[in-house]
Length: 228
Image (spheres, rainbow, N blue to C red):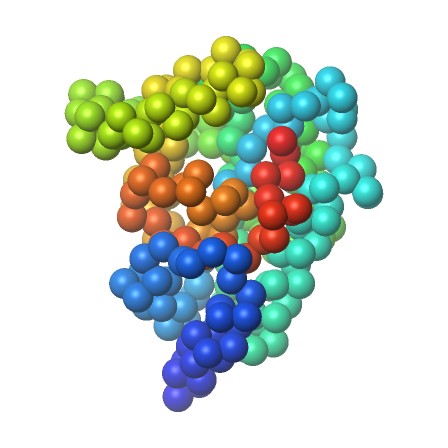
């Protein structure tokens, strides 16, 4: 009965009021996972691309802090209204995207994600933080499959959009490798965690590349992609 009450609170009160974009796989993914005793949330986090201007240490007035505080308030609301649930939040630092795909210095990436890990301990204690490089070997089999069947995973429109973004970022990133990495990440995380993704990106940035990951969108535009 408590689970039914929790799900009703989410579907009739929280989600309609707080969403900034429609969920992905809401009926077949989000809702069944909300009904479980343990809910796993997943949020990937990019490296700080503007580190030359902003530095690598996250300061108290940085956008990252505002975003984390927003997520903390969201989690508090969920725990208050779904008290019988155990909620585990898994954050993933996208270090390989910075180093392999966009050519950021490895030491810069390490320092930034160390700083992020410390802020997570302060603002969202109990959350889990790992780097994508920790799953590098596991992800390789998925990358291989995607490369061999690239056209089955990525259409020309998505590749063109990603290529335009790469040109705008002007970092020499390889759009094809970026898409392969995103899809491999989505497949692996879905296999390992079966989470609900709480995205820090606009919905259209996740479409197709996130494959079967159920996703929710609550962050207002001014707090999205705080690492950019």
